[in-house]
Image: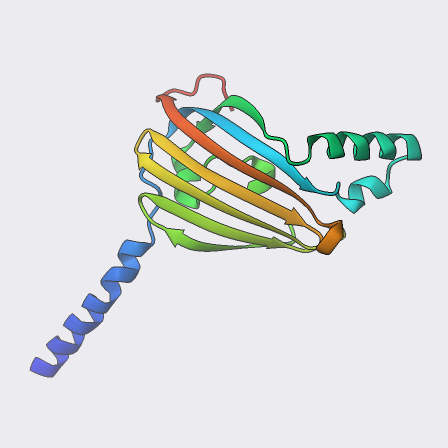
Length: 175
């Protein structure tokens, strides 16, 4: 009997770090004001260029070259739901959260930090995206996202950082 109780205690104690390690970010659902800073890297995606007429292709290549490496900032209001927080898709667009041909691997899932790597394959080629979100408290977040499509000199990418502040419990008509 004593051995059986000892085994149960050891099994229970060994499971504590795993249970504590996997939890959603401790942030409040609701309306958030988020500032994004991003820059393009590398070349425009080959799949994008392949379907464009020559004059449009040249315009896209020129615009990309002009913006590559430069940081652009934008601010938006977004609604973050309790479900998105639980699923680890808070602060993502619906298109990013559910892409076919992609496999996600959550590497860190704690109350104050969430990290994910996503690898995709398909007709557009291989792509990888890594996301980190840090909760500075229930009403403050910051993080980064890096995405790369393609390989070598043909690779294109997007680097982004963001910071968000909780604004209200009710999202109103903000999606």
